Image 1 (cartoon, rainbow, N blue to C red):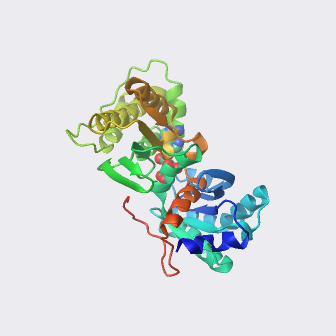
Image 2: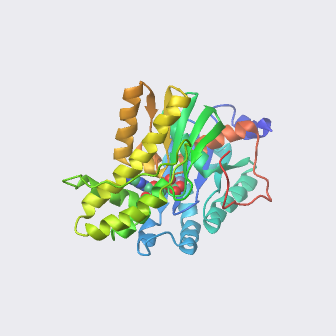
Image 3: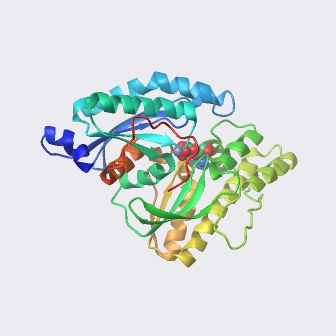
Length: 343
Ligand code: KG4
Ligand code: ZN
């Protein structure tokens, strides 16, 4: 099977393995070209967030339509930027799930069609696993490590053994960390997506004295963020002219809950590396707190650049390179999968 991956490469006589990554799981249509799972050659992204903002959340039908319109332009853009032709691509990696079915369908159908036309292999990748691989674009990954995956739909703590091998140590039992920000933002009457809004408001807080509780789940490394949403609503009813202070309290509570479990995981799994990933890892308060934990425990903290924390195709191409080496290709009859557990 690996021979199949190299078929095209041999036709152009050696050189790096170039993967075209395609992402369309939610509200960003993205393409990227990455060499050997590490070196980003070109990236392009078209977001429909502005449209969804009018509705306070992603409208699946609208997202799918926008992907259909944006997919060709983003692919053309990465080819133009890199001065490469489609024939220079060795394989295609596409987000297969989890995500919005109609949105995923656009990327998966496009990738399978292009793969067939070019006679190159296509791999379907897991969106959340791809988020972790945003870190591979910065430097070679080091193992064993803890991984904290914090996005709009998921919150997972992983023990990462090696490329493509990990155990899930804890997950959210209800809302995801990003969802807590998105719902909190809606409560405060701020925009979608909520994370950047809550961060912006929190930065303007002067007193920083309001507090919100975090869930106590006993001995587990699981998370729960539905309580903080309800508590935000109650706090907002009392302090309805202090959006900045309430946003600060929400951000502080979410960050504290995440860092608390990271620290507890370190007690049981004393690794030397922590990787952060997912949209919420763009949050500066979280980045600072995790870096502080790293200093305290003498651990190396790895966080992707802000633009690779949220959805992008570079991370998809990066993990795609490793999946291809495993020889797990997308069958022509396989489609997208809306719900896909980690691992
Ligand atoms: O990973 P991502 O782009 O998409 C999913 O796979 O879900 O994550 C999106 C989530 C949203 O909930 C958004 O509010 C949150 O990441 N987010 C942030 C920040 N930027 C995005 N949360 C906190 N602070 C930010 N700066
Ligand atoms: Zn994502």
